[in-house]
Length: 183
Ligand code: IMP
Ligand code: MG
Image 1 (cartoon, rainbow, N blue to C red):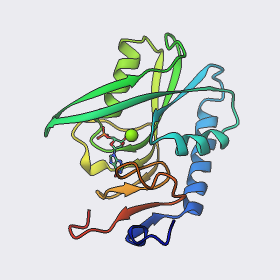
Image 2: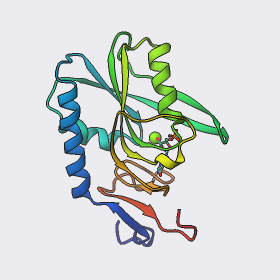
Image 3: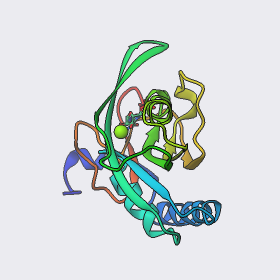
Image 4: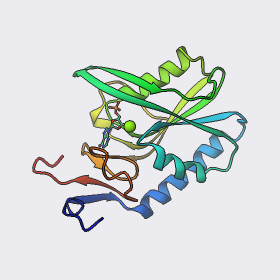
């Protein structure tokens, strides 16, 4: 598969080894922060977060349960967007301490909207966020994650769960597609 021409155009940003090292560190940090908590619910945002989440939870050594939701964001104009949650977790959320796990934080629309809805509409007790990648300069909404693995430049990233037109999710590293406009 990696001999395919398209895959040769990928520039690696973080190798599998670098990712494993950082994700393990983050798992330990989250475990330490939540060690007094017996009721943590970790919610992954499908589809992109499933690879990061599977490594992150295996680096943790505290009790927790997991669930997933599915969300999509639409940009309406430069400062406005809409987020559609097309699949909610089965787990009741009221009163729960929740950590949302997401592949990448870009404009901030998806995570800020999901966090607010879990708190206000679904009455979660507390919502924190953990993201694998953070493209800080792309933000249109003032939002910071509680945990992040890597801050990255404004490039379109694939691999480790992230896709371009549903391809590349299975790469064990993250890379950007080299194109004429360098994006
Ligand atoms: P936000 O609402 O703009 O923060 O969007 C986050 C979502 O956009 C992520 O969950 C991804 O699905 C998608 N996304 C943003 N940047 C990238 C990228 O570089 N590669 C792949 N997907 C991306
Ligand atoms: Mg996503």
